[in-house]
Amino acid sequence: MIPFSGVTAIGDLTNYPNTDLVLGNPTSVDFSKMILPPTLQNLGFENIVRFSMAQLSAAKWPALKELYSNLIDDRDFVNSSLSGIPGGFTFPKGVQTLIWGDNAFGSIPSGIPSSVQIMAFRGNYILDLVGLPTGLIKINFQGNSLKQVTNMDWSSATLVFPISNLTVNQETFDALDSLTEWKNDKTNYYGFLASKGIYTSSSSCSAINGQMKSLWSGKTSYTMNVCVTGANIFFVIINSNVYKTK
Image 1 (cartoon, rainbow, N blue to C red):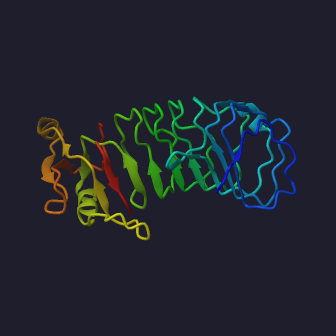
Image 2: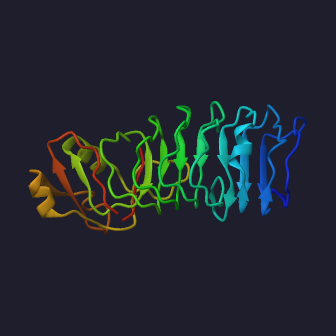
Image 3: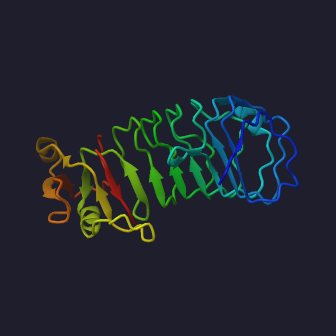
């Protein structure tokens, strides 16, 4: 998709005929008079240095499915140092994909609709996943400051985030261990892909009456030492790279 480059203001696009719209490479954009066509499904922003989220708050969103931009190889909403969402901002009703990478978010924005199935906030400063919507099928928080994730049920999700310490219950261990290695098949996102080992502390595991076990033994060249407990814990995570698909 070729973006409209250098656009500094958006007006009435009611008669815009396409379902996709990407705006790229301006220093700033004025959205104060923006009117989007009702048929627009995918709205993207590329390398916009700054803009007013308050102006977007007044936007009458069409039936958008995605908010993103095409920055380098990934699709990120805006590379513009966003640190939060204004209180008056209303997400598009029915939006399914939010990909807002390389910004300055320190937490999950509030008000995300339950329709969202894909969230990628790569390269922000998020410390925890409080407020993360349920029902997600793809999650990417790589390059954030996550130190611990607990009591999250992602049994149907694709996950991408750093892990170096992993504590799970037996049911979760069995589910993860049954996965085969994903072979980069873009038509079948099923399996696991590990780019680093996991070296969970055995002393920390013993302290919670857990048992050390080897995850994906014989399926990967990386060492995956995890702690398995009898408690109802899904993940306890502290910083590597593991990709887990549904």
